[in-house]
Image (cartoon, rainbow, N blue to C red; front, side, top):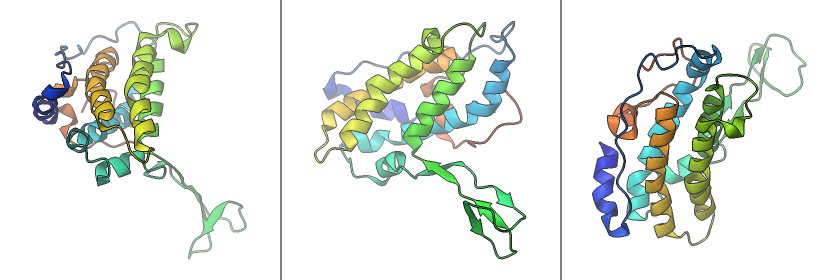
Length: 213
């Protein structure tokens, strides 16, 4: 498992070890609003793929290789397509790309992987509520997500944009983030980092089931 291999390398930094929370139970959503299973279908794939990509940053950050392709890809402002361009059958539509068959295709919207991680984690966390009156900032899931953003993603984003990034600060933020992610994952009923669940890639699109697959 990648995270286990990273921790011994980080010992000189005197960083905390990861906790080992149990896997979320299958019946943990009983009695909650139906927004939760819908949100799982919409965002589980995106969140899990984001975590997979975050874990892949580990070797580069621990080694201090801030110019690695993995890091460049994660922070690339046009790294992934977040909204596919729609195809149209009529000609003359504005904001579309002409196709050979005379139709056109709307422009796709792209963003960075780090921003998609922020967005999908927030949207999934915001769905874990017992009622619609509670403000998002008061939800434990959203609090956990925002804590991870502030202590980890924001630090990495700021440092990677510098001419001379503070490697030690990035290493600490990254490894602290693994612990912060486990707190969030437990709250949104996903397996912890060390489970091995995120060793593979996931589809970002809407899934056919709210189950973990």
